[in-house]
Amino acid sequence: MNGAMSHPLPETKPHIMVFPYPAQGHLLPLLDLTHQLCLRGFTVSIIVTPKNLPYLSSLLSAHPSAVSAITLPFPPHPLIPSGVENVKDIGGHGNPLVMASLRQLREPVVRWISSHPNPPVALISDFFLGWTKDLGIPRFAFFTSGAFLASILHFVSDKLHILQSTEPVCLSDLPGSPVFKTEHLPSLIPQSPSSQDLESVKDSTMNFSSYGCIFNSCECLEEEYMEYVKQNVSENRVYSVGPLSSIGLRKDDSASDVDAKALLSWLDGCPEGSVLYICFGSQKVLTKEQCDALALGLEKSMARFVWVVKKDPIPDGFEDRVAGQGMIVRGWAPQVAMLNHVAVGGFLSHCGWNSVLEAMASGKMILAWPMEADQFVDARLLVEHMGVAVTVCDGGKTVPDPHELSQVIAETMGERGREIRARAKEMGQKAHAATEPGGSSTKDLERLVKELSSLHEDMILKD
Ligand SMILES: O=c1ccn([C@@H]2O[C@H](COP(=O)(O)OP(=O)(O)O[C@H]3O[C@H](CO)[C@@H](O)[C@H](O)[C@H]3O)[C@@H](O)[C@H]2O)c(=O)[nH]1
Image (tube, rainbow, N blue to C red):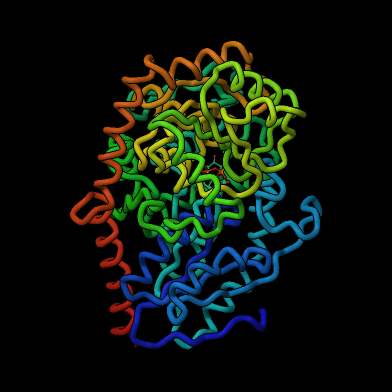
C-alpha cells in the first residue's frame, strides 16, 4: 500500500468505496456521480493509480474532507508500455490488457478494506471491473454505456457461439429483436476469443448479478432497454442517473487545456446553429488518409466547424485555407461547454456514450461515425430509434468519400437537417428535465442514496 493513503473518515457518515476504470470516458462520469454523492453527505474513498491521481483534483478540491484517494501502484503488464496507466495513452485496443492488469489489484484492495477502522459499506465500480463483485462488500456496477449496450452484453454472454457465424446476428430476446453484423457488436464481445478476452466476458457477466446496477443514462433515451435490464437484474436495484455531465463537476470544464476563452469568443461571433463541432472522444486518433478526407469534406461543405484533435495528422496548409470557416483545436477541449453554445448546430461524433449523452443533454443532432466498442450500438439508437442523427461514415479504419461527406454535412447543417435538429432539441429538453428536481434521474439518484444509507444503517446495527 502507498503512503498517500490515510483513513481520516468520520464514523458517522456513510462511507463508500469508488473504483473507476482508467479511461476518460469511464473515469469522468463516475467522478461526476461521486460529486453528487458527496453533496448528499457520503464520504468516499477512490481507488486510483498514481498517473490517474491528477484527474481527481477537481473532486478533491470540491470536497476536501469527504473524498480521499487510495493510490495503488499500477500492476505491470508485459504488453502495456511502462508509464501507461490510462487507455487514452494506448488506445481502445488496450482495454483487455488494462483490464487484465487491474485484476491484480484484488489483494491490495481486499487488504485495504479489511484493515480500515470504518470500512466502506458498498463499492461502486466500473462495469469493466466485474471481478470486484466478490470483494466482500455489496457492489454496484457503474455502466458508462447505455442500457441497450448492457442488454446486448447480457444476451450474448452465454451464446458466444452465435458470433462465429459470418451472418448478421439477430438478438431475438431484446426489444425490437435488433440485427447486427458481428463486427458491429461491442468489442468487449470477442469474435475469436483468446483466454484473456474470455476473462473480460466472465467479468462482464458479473455485472447483472451484482448487488445493483447504476447507469449513466436516462429513461427518456432508452426506456425499453432499461426495462429489459430491470427484468434481468435482481431486486429492481437499477438506477438510471444520467446524463451525469449535466450535474457533474465539469460544468466549468476547468480540465480543458486549450484557450477556451478564445474558442468560445470565436463561437460568439458565429450565427446560431451554424457550427459543426467535431471530436472523436479521448482515445481515437485518425489516420492520415482519414484526416485528408475529413479535411477536404469540411472545406468543400463550406460549413463552419471546430475540429478537436489529439495527435491526428492535419494536412499541411489546411488551417490557412479554412481560416474564417473553421478552427482546429489541439488538446483537451471544453466539450460540454462547446456543445451547449448556441452557435453549435451539430456534432460529428464517433458516438462514444458520453458524447452521445452530452449531445442529447444540449439538444444537438449528431452526424455519426461509429468506429469501435459500443459505438455502432449507440449510433443505431440515435439514428433508428430516436431519429436525432444521420450516419456519415462507418468503421474505425474506413476512409470516407470526401465528396459524399461534404454533401451530407452541407445538407444536414442546412435546410434538410431542420427536422433532425428539431427532434434533437426536443430530446434535449427531455434529457435536461431528467436531472432537474422531480425528474426520473433525480428520483433514481435519491433511491440510490436511500439504498446506500440503509446499507450503512445495517452495518451500524450489526456492530
Ligand atoms: O477534447 C476532449 C475530448 C473528450 N472530452 C470528454 O471526454 C469524454 C469522452 O467520452 P466518450 O465520448 O464516451 O468517448 P471515449 O473517450 O472514446 O470513450 C470510451 O468509453 C465510452 C464509455 O464507456 C464508450 O462509450 C466509448 O465507445 C469508448 O471509446 C466525453 O465526456 C467528452 O466530453 C473532452 O471534454 N474534451
